[in-house]
Length: 564
Image (tube, rainbow, N blue to C red):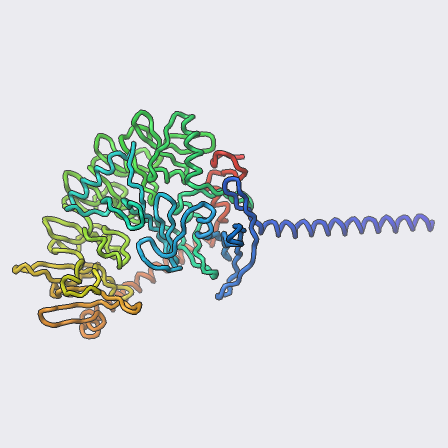
């Protein structure tokens, strides 16, 4: 009896020990799994980088995950951060080191060493990223056009000639040992951020569009493909299917999105690559085709008539009836069109915004205003479109309302240093009167041939009639001051002095501020309603990447679209 009880006790102890051991193993499993979940692998070509994760508290009390990799001589460098709400941002500088691209401090168009901005030379373009900005600025430096873009240089020359030899696309030699012929703005849903470590980070969309690369995330592994890798992979793949891949950098950029501009027998179109298959989404029947990355659409032509079409669309968004098409604004999807030597503006639906009856669109001296960091010669202060008719300039807004008839000699004061003999005076076209009110400088010519300058709001209200000899700004000691100079009358005022002494100007600022506040209140109410409808739904960023990348694999397959 006693032996039986002893056996039962031993059996019970064995069972308890087994259960305890199982629980310990289970706990260790979850601990190691949690640790492993934090350790992401970055894969580029044949190289795998293991990450180390640390938690970082920012000054505002938020907890971020920061992942670093070891780059040999550079030591441990940050590769990405994960925000408190699970969003992933990639370190732009580290990606450049991995991809072999040149990373430079400061914007492409600015000669400084700002750490709030950077520009990347990826071989085919200069790409500018700026902290807190929802825009990427691209300066494409490839001036060689072949095959499906063979006529582009001729179109540039024709457009330049119609604008009296001045055009933003005119081929000019850059002081950065490149030829910049195209500029493009990419709008982002989430801005670039400067993290607590002083580095610039950008979202998945910003990185893939900005650097023309693919990122495929599966589990904890992140596979990266540069444009050069995509080109090498897709070129042979498409050749087997009977297609010839584009040679032009402008069009090769579409590869990041799984779209390939291809040709057959001097006809061109677009195919969508999905795994081991490809499908024509724009038929191979066009004389020319050009990728517009900012809107993910293509300019097409047939028999020298141009239009616009989206991949997979049954009909062109803009009919093939124009002599030329050029993107004006990606966010609003506005396009400059030319017909019979005249220019106008249409929207993405082909509706006429500005009639095709003007000699040119935009300001010809755009490069003179580089110091004002304007995004476009076609859209001034983000709101107004200059038009030229019979030698005089007028202004439209983006809705197509004319806010100033073509009566001005110029838009902007492009040569104040000559007018007042002061080399510190900088060309000025936009004046930020307040944080809510931007104004545009214009000039008119008197009967005696003298040119004088005035100022108009972006709503079309005249602030100052054409009275001043020059309107300009001077930057000294990091401070910018705007001046209004009437040489003959020995009058010189700063903007602040005019605000202090002109009641009508103060009232205008107040009205604009009240209007902006009312609009902000309305937008906030709409956003609150939308947030309630959305019920706070947020998608996991990695799953988002998987969906966007057609479930691509991360195990080194030759085709980045091929599934496991």
